[in-house]
Amino acid sequence: MPRDPITQLFARVAELERRQANMVRPAKVVANEGGRVRVSDGAGFDPEPMPQASVSAGTWKIDAPAGAGTAGIVLCPEGEPSLARFIPTDAYDGHPAGSTDPGKMTLTGPGGETIVIEGGRIEIDTPGEAVVRAPVVLVESADVRLGGSGGKKVARIGDAVAGGVIVEGSGTVTAID
Image (cartoon, rainbow, N blue to C red; front, side, top):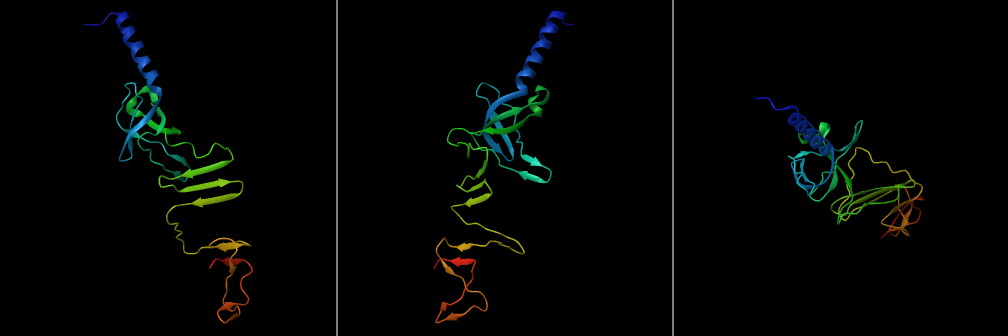
């Protein structure tokens, strides 16, 4: 039995309102389930787990899987939660922005690791081990300080050493004892 036109119109309007409300929703991650995030807006919008967007440009990819509590935006093409993607966007309780300076990029890891890029300088800080793997490691600098500032000149092959003391060492590389 066909519905009357007014009932059909109300049903279509309700569907359009549902889709419009679902297009862009602020939400927080409830759980990361093997690369898909379960999110909630705290007001009843609890869709199925969805992919998290990553920052990608050409061959560069930055993946930072969102954990519980990560705030962001859920984008639902056509208003359909089954097509949704979560985009982490905002700092949230206990996890402030790494920097508010637009000239400074800060990457902060969960273990306290940081990489800061600012004003022609890159700083890497980690409470653990730093590893560089490459067939060749090239350091080009007029001032290489191993262990900190104020060290002694480092001996090179052929430098004069007398009684275990470097007589003539590198003019660019120093090391703390």
